[in-house]
Image 1 (cartoon, rainbow, N blue to C red):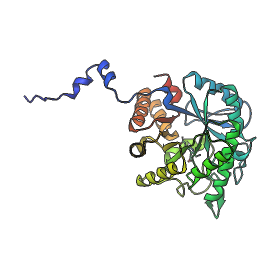
Image 2 (cartoon, helix red, strand yellow):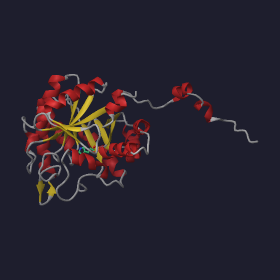
Image 3 (cartoon, rainbow, N blue to C red):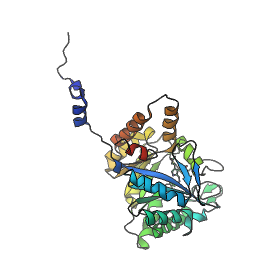
Image 4 (cartoon, rainbow, N blue to C red):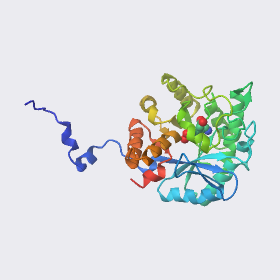
Length: 322
Ligand code: PBG
């Protein structure tokens, strides 16, 4: 009988030794929990494709943020759904807008919570694109001007970190300069540097009421087929002053996470997006997969690939398992 000399199974024999040699361990500090805040009062609109998640008005958001903190999750990422949408997304650039209200309310009620805000216009424009249009296309440079106004509203409201997600060229430099000129040199930028034009955003667009009313986002978000281009996107954002680099979605883009982390050694975030969450929830509901096992496995693998930070709708649930 052939006798292997080297036996890798020796270190897999019991939990104790497996625990000792485990290379990747999740902890609560890894996670950011996304929240949808909607204009109005006393609103809790459950999002049917995202069990456990709802659109919340500011008053109902506060108990939820307290609950997130109780779970040991120290950071939330905010998306706003305004009362009125228009061609330029005015609500996002108003100090009275939904996101400004939400940030102030959270920093008032739970000051320790690290509040990150999405910086983009698709939730605020009536056409659902990520900036103002010119001849049916998003006008890149006009969008940059508005993005600066948007981050300054968020900064004045007390946001801890901003996360631009619109994939406009030059957005990081514009935002960094805008923040610095107004004295917000301490606010970091987490850039959605490599954000793909992905079908996995479907449930989010229903949740955030941000689906484009015509066309798609392929004119600014990346082609899922490309990885070299992701490196150029990331490199440009680092040069422009991004503090954290994000790759999005996560599970289908682990190679991009790995490549970016290995090449640039930057603090790297991955966004396990709505569709990834919904697929797991739906299959688990049908009894086809083990919910907790798949939740932990996917998150562990995203971290193993190189993510230091994971934005995930599972943050509260996974915290209970750690
Ligand atoms: C754009 C934005 C999107 C997501 C986060 N920021 C959607 C899009 O590009 O259409 C998607 C997140 C998710 O699917 O969970 N502001």
